[in-house]
Length: 214
View 1 (cartoon, rainbow, N blue to C red):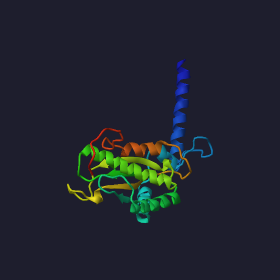
View 2: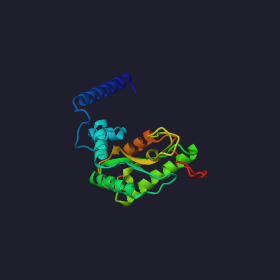
View 3: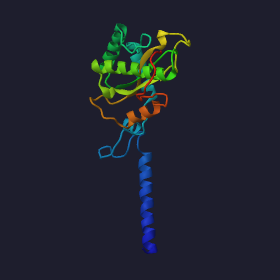
View 4: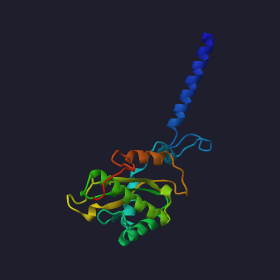
């Protein structure tokens, strides 16, 4: 390529870069130029692709859920059986979730501090799974569940080494939102929320454990 050709090509590239920069400056925040063309994204699309949710929208949605339904159910000692009061609370959760199809939830299971930590991790997961199965049986799609996990004995409501029902619980929390259509695919936004919430303490491994505990 001659020096004149290189100079001409460099000038063309510089002009193109300047045009793109000008277009970006004149584009409303959150949008891309030429909205009628393939590849256009609005602000919500861009945030979703980056794995970002609007924190105020999420906070409001979570508060509405907590006000309309009882997010916490409790269990008998060394049990993951859903009692009548728990089923009533879960029915209220399910009704709200069906009425608000964009909300995505996580369910965390907990144990009291009686027994081995490993056992309490496992029973916490069993409690979360019991709540999840009940919600799906009440009409909440599995795709609405971002995460089903255990906190074990790590987050007691009442700091006691004794048996404490308030610590033996499963808590449903709104932690994301989608666009509200049925059978929504597992997309980048949901994957980002799962990744940010899932920790080494939230074991789902099936392991042999001694019986008896929180």
